[in-house]
View 1 (tube, rainbow, N blue to C red):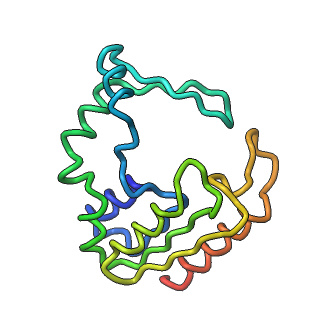
View 2 (cartoon, rainbow, N blue to C red; view 1 turned 90 degrees about the vertical axis):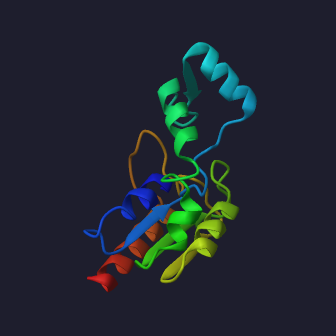
Length: 152
């Protein structure tokens, strides 16, 4: 979500945008994690939902740190936003806290809408492997479609 905010600011092709459980700060790593990352050259994260081991090169960390004050500064990007923006967040999200959605909303210059869905988390109750839409995922999809249709 955070990256889509950044990329959206770099084009006029997109007229509006939506994030689901988007971060307000891409730097989500502790000093200890970064130290280990630099030492090993790679940082591995286990995805608890899929049991996949996600590996990130130290190049990712270097790029992140080099650009946090500039192009990856989501607060600065959103302070200049004039495009319609829908922020959807699960109230019980453990991976991306509600405070991050509130940050995104607060930093947006204008045209933002914030939707916090009670009783759901990061995946809006969708499970892996995906079999069907959960009720909360249906709500997210419907809110997203309605928002986009209003813009078109």
